[in-house]
Length: 393
Image (cartoon, rainbow, N blue to C red; front, side):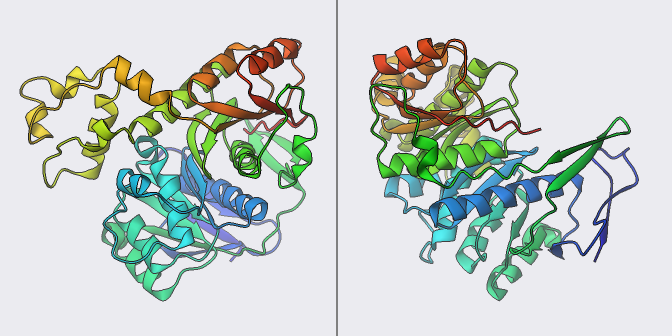
Protein backbone atom coordinates (compact mmCIF):
# COMPACT_ATOMS: atom_id res chain seq x y z
CA UNK A 1 0.00 0.00 0.00
CA UNK A 2 1.46 3.34 -1.08
CA UNK A 3 -1.28 5.62 0.30
CA UNK A 4 -3.72 5.83 3.21
CA UNK A 5 -6.63 8.28 3.10
CA UNK A 6 -7.46 9.97 6.42
CA UNK A 7 -10.75 11.37 7.71
CA UNK A 8 -9.23 14.86 8.02
CA UNK A 9 -6.01 16.63 8.99
CA UNK A 10 -5.17 18.26 12.33
CA UNK A 11 -8.70 19.72 12.44
CA UNK A 12 -12.02 18.65 10.86
CA UNK A 13 -11.95 21.52 8.37
CA UNK A 14 -8.57 20.41 6.94
CA UNK A 15 -9.55 18.18 4.02
CA UNK A 16 -8.45 16.27 2.06
CA UNK A 17 -5.91 14.41 4.16
CA UNK A 18 -3.70 11.40 3.54
CA UNK A 19 -0.30 9.84 4.14
CA UNK A 20 1.60 8.39 1.20
CA UNK A 21 4.99 7.22 -0.04
CA UNK A 22 6.59 8.82 -3.08
CA UNK A 23 8.51 5.58 -3.63
CA UNK A 24 7.91 2.12 -2.22
CA UNK A 25 5.22 0.88 0.13
CA UNK A 26 4.02 2.29 3.44
CA UNK A 27 5.88 0.54 6.29
CA UNK A 28 2.72 0.33 8.39
CA UNK A 29 -0.38 -1.83 8.37
CA UNK A 30 -3.56 -0.76 10.13
CA UNK A 31 -4.85 -3.89 11.84
CA UNK A 32 -7.82 -2.18 13.48
CA UNK A 33 -9.49 1.22 13.64
CA UNK A 34 -9.02 4.30 11.52
CA UNK A 35 -6.07 6.40 12.72
CA UNK A 36 -6.14 10.15 12.12
CA UNK A 37 -3.50 12.68 11.13
CA UNK A 38 -2.35 13.46 14.69
CA UNK A 39 -2.55 9.77 15.64
CA UNK A 40 -0.06 8.95 12.90
CA UNK A 41 2.26 11.84 13.82
CA UNK A 42 2.33 10.48 17.37
CA UNK A 43 2.69 6.89 16.20
CA UNK A 44 5.64 7.50 13.89
CA UNK A 45 7.50 9.79 16.28
CA UNK A 46 6.96 7.49 19.25
CA UNK A 47 8.03 4.42 17.28
CA UNK A 48 11.37 6.05 16.49
CA UNK A 49 11.82 6.85 20.18
CA UNK A 50 11.22 3.31 21.45
CA UNK A 51 13.29 1.76 18.68
CA UNK A 52 16.26 3.94 19.70
CA UNK A 53 15.70 3.29 23.41
CA UNK A 54 15.84 -0.45 22.73
CA UNK A 55 19.04 -0.03 20.69
CA UNK A 56 20.66 2.10 23.41
CA UNK A 57 19.73 -0.05 26.42
CA UNK A 58 19.02 -3.52 25.04
CA UNK A 59 15.75 -3.47 27.00
CA UNK A 60 12.13 -3.52 25.78
CA UNK A 61 10.88 0.06 25.65
CA UNK A 62 7.60 1.93 25.54
CA UNK A 63 6.38 5.48 25.11
CA UNK A 64 3.16 7.38 25.74
CA UNK A 65 2.67 10.25 23.27
CA UNK A 66 0.30 13.23 23.25
CA UNK A 67 0.30 16.00 20.65
CA UNK A 68 3.65 15.01 19.13
CA UNK A 69 5.59 14.94 22.42
CA UNK A 70 6.08 12.12 24.91
CA UNK A 71 4.17 12.18 28.19
CA UNK A 72 6.27 9.21 29.29
CA UNK A 73 9.03 6.90 28.07
CA UNK A 74 10.60 3.92 29.80
CA UNK A 75 12.47 0.64 29.58
CA UNK A 76 11.27 -2.63 31.07
CA UNK A 77 13.07 -2.48 34.42
CA UNK A 78 11.30 -4.41 37.20
CA UNK A 79 8.63 -2.59 39.20
CA UNK A 80 8.62 -2.24 42.98
CA UNK A 81 5.39 -2.97 44.85
CA UNK A 82 4.98 0.77 45.38
CA UNK A 83 5.23 1.54 41.67
CA UNK A 84 2.85 -1.30 40.83
CA UNK A 85 0.31 0.27 43.15
CA UNK A 86 0.61 3.88 41.92
CA UNK A 87 0.54 2.68 38.30
CA UNK A 88 -2.60 0.61 39.05
CA UNK A 89 -1.10 -2.68 37.85
CA UNK A 90 -0.89 -4.44 41.22
CA UNK A 91 -4.12 -6.34 40.51
CA UNK A 92 -3.03 -7.95 37.23
CA UNK A 93 -3.37 -11.73 37.34
CA UNK A 94 -0.79 -12.53 34.64
CA UNK A 95 2.93 -11.96 35.32
CA UNK A 96 4.14 -8.64 33.91
CA UNK A 97 6.41 -9.22 30.91
CA UNK A 98 9.31 -6.80 30.27
CA UNK A 99 7.33 -4.99 27.54
CA UNK A 100 4.29 -4.75 29.83
CA UNK A 101 6.52 -3.32 32.55
CA UNK A 102 7.94 -0.76 30.12
CA UNK A 103 4.40 0.26 29.15
CA UNK A 104 3.27 0.51 32.80
CA UNK A 105 6.24 2.79 33.53
CA UNK A 106 5.70 4.96 30.45
CA UNK A 107 1.98 5.34 31.15
CA UNK A 108 2.48 5.86 34.88
CA UNK A 109 5.07 8.64 34.65
CA UNK A 110 2.49 11.37 34.08
CA UNK A 111 -0.95 9.81 34.09
CA UNK A 112 -2.74 13.13 33.64
CA UNK A 113 -0.85 13.93 30.44
CA UNK A 114 -1.09 10.34 29.19
CA UNK A 115 -4.90 10.41 29.21
CA UNK A 116 -5.96 9.74 25.60
CA UNK A 117 -2.42 8.97 24.44
CA UNK A 118 -0.91 7.03 21.56
CA UNK A 119 1.31 4.14 22.67
CA UNK A 120 4.51 2.81 21.11
CA UNK A 121 6.08 -0.56 21.95
CA UNK A 122 9.53 -1.65 20.83
CA UNK A 123 8.64 -5.35 21.04
CA UNK A 124 5.70 -7.60 20.19
CA UNK A 125 2.59 -6.66 22.15
CA UNK A 126 1.66 -9.65 24.30
CA UNK A 127 -1.53 -10.53 26.14
CA UNK A 128 -0.68 -8.91 29.47
CA UNK A 129 0.40 -5.67 27.79
CA UNK A 130 -2.86 -5.61 25.83
CA UNK A 131 -4.81 -6.11 29.05
CA UNK A 132 -3.04 -3.10 30.60
CA UNK A 133 -3.76 -1.00 27.51
CA UNK A 134 -7.41 -2.06 27.41
CA UNK A 135 -8.16 -0.56 30.82
CA UNK A 136 -6.74 2.91 29.99
CA UNK A 137 -8.16 5.77 27.91
CA UNK A 138 -6.01 5.74 24.79
CA UNK A 139 -6.26 6.46 21.06
CA UNK A 140 -4.07 3.66 19.73
CA UNK A 141 -0.87 1.65 19.72
CA UNK A 142 1.98 0.97 17.31
CA UNK A 143 4.25 -2.07 17.61
CA UNK A 144 6.27 -4.41 15.37
CA UNK A 145 3.79 -7.24 16.00
CA UNK A 146 0.97 -8.55 18.18
CA UNK A 147 0.26 -11.99 19.55
CA UNK A 148 -3.17 -13.37 18.51
CA UNK A 149 -4.41 -13.01 22.10
CA UNK A 150 -3.24 -9.39 22.30
CA UNK A 151 -4.78 -8.45 18.97
CA UNK A 152 -8.14 -9.92 19.96
CA UNK A 153 -8.14 -7.91 23.20
CA UNK A 154 -7.22 -4.66 21.46
CA UNK A 155 -9.76 -5.16 18.68
CA UNK A 156 -12.50 -5.20 21.34
CA UNK A 157 -11.40 -1.86 22.86
CA UNK A 158 -13.53 1.25 22.24
CA UNK A 159 -16.34 -0.82 20.77
CA UNK A 160 -14.03 -2.17 18.09
CA UNK A 161 -12.67 1.19 16.88
CA UNK A 162 -9.32 1.21 18.73
CA UNK A 163 -6.37 2.01 16.46
CA UNK A 164 -3.87 -0.85 16.17
CA UNK A 165 -0.90 -0.29 13.86
CA UNK A 166 1.80 -2.77 12.91
CA UNK A 167 5.10 -1.33 11.67
CA UNK A 168 7.93 -2.99 9.81
CA UNK A 169 10.86 -2.88 12.28
CA UNK A 170 13.34 -3.08 9.40
CA UNK A 171 12.00 0.03 7.67
CA UNK A 172 14.60 2.75 7.20
CA UNK A 173 13.55 6.13 5.79
CA UNK A 174 15.42 8.16 3.20
CA UNK A 175 18.26 10.30 4.60
CA UNK A 176 16.58 13.53 3.48
CA UNK A 177 13.24 14.59 4.97
CA UNK A 178 10.84 17.28 3.78
CA UNK A 179 7.75 19.11 4.97
CA UNK A 180 5.71 22.05 3.74
CA UNK A 181 4.84 25.23 5.62
CA UNK A 182 2.73 27.92 3.95
CA UNK A 183 3.25 26.30 0.59
CA UNK A 184 7.04 26.33 0.97
CA UNK A 185 8.98 23.06 1.13
CA UNK A 186 11.59 22.64 3.86
CA UNK A 187 14.31 20.04 3.42
CA UNK A 188 16.94 18.72 5.83
CA UNK A 189 18.95 15.64 6.62
CA UNK A 190 17.30 13.35 9.15
CA UNK A 191 18.60 13.62 12.69
CA UNK A 192 20.59 10.38 12.76
CA UNK A 193 22.75 11.38 15.74
CA UNK A 194 23.84 8.31 17.70
CA UNK A 195 23.08 8.56 21.42
CA UNK A 196 23.80 4.93 22.30
CA UNK A 197 27.53 5.19 23.08
CA UNK A 198 29.36 6.34 26.21
CA UNK A 199 31.32 8.92 24.21
CA UNK A 200 28.70 11.49 25.15
CA UNK A 201 30.16 11.41 28.68
CA UNK A 202 33.74 12.24 27.66
CA UNK A 203 33.59 15.98 28.43
CA UNK A 204 32.86 16.38 32.14
CA UNK A 205 33.66 19.91 33.36
CA UNK A 206 32.40 19.46 36.94
CA UNK A 207 34.47 18.42 39.97
CA UNK A 208 32.30 15.30 40.29
CA UNK A 209 33.10 13.14 37.27
CA UNK A 210 31.46 9.93 38.45
CA UNK A 211 28.71 8.58 36.21
CA UNK A 212 27.69 5.07 37.33
CA UNK A 213 26.27 2.75 34.69
CA UNK A 214 22.66 3.25 35.78
CA UNK A 215 23.10 7.03 35.47
CA UNK A 216 24.55 6.65 31.96
CA UNK A 217 21.57 4.50 30.99
CA UNK A 218 19.08 7.00 32.41
CA UNK A 219 20.79 9.97 30.74
CA UNK A 220 20.65 8.16 27.39
CA UNK A 221 16.93 7.61 28.00
CA UNK A 222 16.56 11.34 28.71
CA UNK A 223 18.44 12.42 25.58
CA UNK A 224 16.69 9.97 23.25
CA UNK A 225 13.34 11.08 24.68
CA UNK A 226 14.27 14.71 24.04
CA UNK A 227 15.21 13.90 20.45
CA UNK A 228 11.48 13.37 19.81
CA UNK A 229 10.08 16.08 22.11
CA UNK A 230 8.97 19.50 20.88
CA UNK A 231 11.63 22.03 21.85
CA UNK A 232 12.61 23.68 24.12
CA UNK A 233 12.60 20.59 26.32
CA UNK A 234 14.17 18.92 29.34
CA UNK A 235 13.61 15.43 30.77
CA UNK A 236 14.05 14.06 34.30
CA UNK A 237 14.69 10.30 34.46
CA UNK A 238 15.01 7.84 37.33
CA UNK A 239 15.36 4.05 37.39
CA UNK A 240 14.80 3.58 33.67
CA UNK A 241 11.87 5.89 33.09
CA UNK A 242 11.07 9.53 32.42
CA UNK A 243 9.46 11.03 35.51
CA UNK A 244 9.05 14.58 34.24
CA UNK A 245 9.10 16.03 30.71
CA UNK A 246 8.89 19.75 29.98
CA UNK A 247 8.15 20.38 26.30
CA UNK A 248 7.59 23.27 23.93
CA UNK A 249 8.40 26.13 26.28
CA UNK A 250 10.02 29.33 25.01
CA UNK A 251 12.24 29.63 28.10
CA UNK A 252 14.45 26.78 29.28
CA UNK A 253 13.92 27.59 32.96
CA UNK A 254 10.18 27.18 32.37
CA UNK A 255 10.90 23.72 30.88
CA UNK A 256 13.01 22.85 33.92
CA UNK A 257 10.33 24.03 36.33
CA UNK A 258 7.50 22.30 34.47
CA UNK A 259 9.35 18.99 34.23
CA UNK A 260 10.60 19.32 37.81
CA UNK A 261 7.06 19.84 39.07
CA UNK A 262 5.98 16.69 37.20
CA UNK A 263 8.89 14.77 38.73
CA UNK A 264 7.83 15.99 42.18
CA UNK A 265 4.25 14.88 41.57
CA UNK A 266 5.51 11.43 40.48
CA UNK A 267 7.48 11.16 43.72
CA UNK A 268 4.69 12.56 45.91
CA UNK A 269 2.30 9.91 44.58
CA UNK A 270 4.56 7.41 46.37
CA UNK A 271 4.28 9.20 49.73
CA UNK A 272 2.63 6.82 52.25
CA UNK A 273 0.04 9.43 53.16
CA UNK A 274 -0.99 9.77 49.51
CA UNK A 275 -0.99 6.01 48.89
CA UNK A 276 -3.28 5.57 51.91
CA UNK A 277 -5.98 7.98 50.67
CA UNK A 278 -9.35 6.32 51.46
CA UNK A 279 -10.91 6.29 47.99
CA UNK A 280 -14.46 5.06 47.59
CA UNK A 281 -15.01 1.79 45.76
CA UNK A 282 -15.70 2.07 42.04
CA UNK A 283 -14.20 5.51 41.48
CA UNK A 284 -13.01 5.91 37.86
CA UNK A 285 -9.27 5.85 37.19
CA UNK A 286 -9.26 9.30 35.62
CA UNK A 287 -11.17 10.78 38.59
CA UNK A 288 -8.76 9.13 41.01
CA UNK A 289 -5.74 10.49 39.09
CA UNK A 290 -7.17 13.99 39.02
CA UNK A 291 -8.08 13.87 42.71
CA UNK A 292 -4.58 12.76 43.69
CA UNK A 293 -2.99 15.54 41.63
CA UNK A 294 -5.24 18.17 43.21
CA UNK A 295 -4.69 16.75 46.71
CA UNK A 296 -0.90 16.98 46.47
CA UNK A 297 -1.00 20.38 44.74
CA UNK A 298 -1.54 23.93 45.94
CA UNK A 299 -5.33 23.74 45.45
CA UNK A 300 -5.87 20.78 47.78
CA UNK A 301 -8.87 22.50 49.38
CA UNK A 302 -10.79 21.93 46.13
CA UNK A 303 -11.12 18.21 46.94
CA UNK A 304 -11.22 18.43 50.75
CA UNK A 305 -13.97 21.03 51.16
CA UNK A 306 -17.25 19.94 52.72
CA UNK A 307 -19.61 18.47 50.16
CA UNK A 308 -16.77 17.60 47.77
CA UNK A 309 -14.57 15.13 49.63
CA UNK A 310 -17.58 12.84 50.09
CA UNK A 311 -17.65 12.28 46.29
CA UNK A 312 -14.21 10.65 46.39
CA UNK A 313 -13.36 9.40 49.88
CA UNK A 314 -14.96 7.22 52.55
CA UNK A 315 -13.64 9.63 55.18
CA UNK A 316 -12.09 13.09 54.99
CA UNK A 317 -8.26 12.86 54.64
CA UNK A 318 -5.89 15.16 56.45
CA UNK A 319 -4.17 17.66 54.13
CA UNK A 320 -0.64 16.98 52.97
CA UNK A 321 1.15 19.99 54.42
CA UNK A 322 3.84 22.00 52.68
CA UNK A 323 6.33 20.81 55.30
CA UNK A 324 5.40 17.17 54.66
CA UNK A 325 5.74 17.65 50.91
CA UNK A 326 9.15 19.30 51.19
CA UNK A 327 10.39 16.58 53.55
CA UNK A 328 9.22 13.80 51.21
CA UNK A 329 10.60 15.44 48.04
CA UNK A 330 13.97 15.83 49.79
CA UNK A 331 14.18 12.03 49.93
CA UNK A 332 14.19 11.71 46.14
CA UNK A 333 17.79 11.22 45.02
CA UNK A 334 19.78 9.87 42.07
CA UNK A 335 17.65 11.65 39.46
CA UNK A 336 19.11 12.31 35.98
CA UNK A 337 18.38 15.35 33.84
CA UNK A 338 18.84 15.83 30.11
CA UNK A 339 18.40 19.02 28.11
CA UNK A 340 17.96 19.39 24.34
CA UNK A 341 20.31 22.42 24.34
CA UNK A 342 22.58 24.27 26.75
CA UNK A 343 21.45 25.63 30.09
CA UNK A 344 21.97 29.41 29.84
CA UNK A 345 22.07 30.09 33.59
CA UNK A 346 22.63 28.31 36.87
CA UNK A 347 18.98 28.84 37.89
CA UNK A 348 18.12 25.66 35.96
CA UNK A 349 20.54 23.71 38.14
CA UNK A 350 19.11 25.25 41.31
CA UNK A 351 15.63 24.08 40.28
CA UNK A 352 16.86 20.64 39.22
CA UNK A 353 18.61 20.15 42.56
CA UNK A 354 15.29 20.62 44.39
CA UNK A 355 13.95 17.53 42.59
CA UNK A 356 16.87 15.26 43.47
CA UNK A 357 18.98 15.66 40.30
CA UNK A 358 22.53 14.32 40.72
CA UNK A 359 23.52 13.74 37.07
CA UNK A 360 23.11 16.01 34.06
CA UNK A 361 23.78 15.73 30.32
CA UNK A 362 23.44 18.87 28.24
CA UNK A 363 24.97 20.39 25.13
CA UNK A 364 27.13 23.06 26.77
CA UNK A 365 28.30 26.15 24.92
CA UNK A 366 26.57 28.93 26.85
CA UNK A 367 28.47 32.15 27.57
CA UNK A 368 27.52 31.43 31.18
CA UNK A 369 28.80 27.84 31.27
CA UNK A 370 31.05 28.88 34.16
CA UNK A 371 27.99 29.80 36.24
CA UNK A 372 26.27 26.53 35.37
CA UNK A 373 29.37 24.49 36.27
CA UNK A 374 29.81 26.42 39.51
CA UNK A 375 26.21 25.73 40.51
CA UNK A 376 26.66 22.01 39.78
CA UNK A 377 29.81 21.95 41.91
CA UNK A 378 27.90 23.68 44.70
CA UNK A 379 25.66 20.57 44.94
CA UNK A 380 28.26 17.98 43.85
CA UNK A 381 26.29 17.27 40.66
CA UNK A 382 28.13 15.43 37.88
CA UNK A 383 27.50 17.09 34.50
CA UNK A 384 28.58 16.11 31.00
CA UNK A 385 28.78 18.48 28.05
CA UNK A 386 27.63 16.37 25.12
CA UNK A 387 28.19 18.98 22.42
CA UNK A 388 24.91 17.74 20.87
CA UNK A 389 21.83 19.89 20.32
CA UNK A 390 18.55 17.97 19.99
CA UNK A 391 15.97 20.49 18.79
CA UNK A 392 12.83 18.91 17.36
CA UNK A 393 10.01 20.72 15.55
